[in-house]
Length: 285
Image (cartoon, rainbow, N blue to C red; front, top):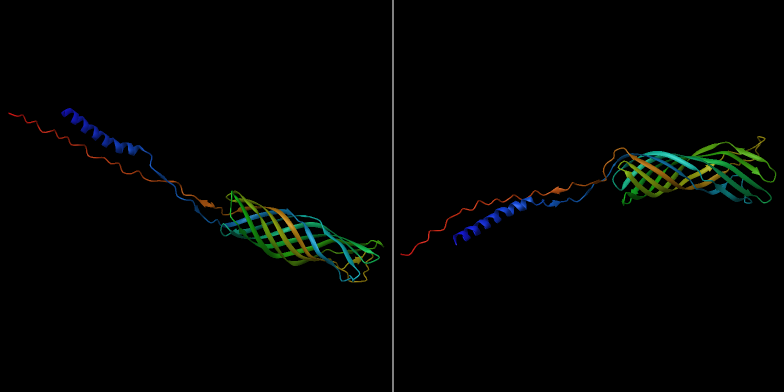
């Protein structure tokens, strides 16, 4: 009987001592902190290339009479390229200033005045300078849609201008002429973040370039009987372009805290059991 009691007490003590040791060997629970969004910001450089699709609203001249009807006023597409710099205030608003050269686009016009008609030929080009503001509308899988608007000035140039009378063959010419015009633009596109400091974007832009004008046209013999420059009024363009942006002060768009580990609970070490021998059995007389 004594040995059974002793074994039972020893077994309970062993289990009690071993339980905390087993618990101490288990991996501690892992606690993850939620990602913290950090606004991006800083200066950036940009480069743009694209092509234009232009339209002339009105073709006029001081020499026109009510009998003159404009039959054609077409402008070919042309390539353009530019550079700029800007500042990203946060992850939804940025501004930049751009300057670009818009290559020569061929212009063809035709008018009629009853018994006769005139063909017009020339080349138009522009230097366009804009201050732009954009709203970035959120980012999904590194893609950010955006919209924007810009205002500025365009230096509009007409060169290689000639006017051919289709009935007589008489030809008149105009010298190269440039003028500054107020310009404005609307933007929309998608930006793809390739790396932390490099973004590519594909965008559409509607731009109003203002008016163009030739100088007074002079005949091939140097004679001119009337003041007759030609005006291209309300020139607009639907532009499609590819832009590359380089951040000069890159920062992580998301700061994610490293997983934190909770410290293991302190191991409980109970005091060793104190063995008290049972009292001696009393024998009866």
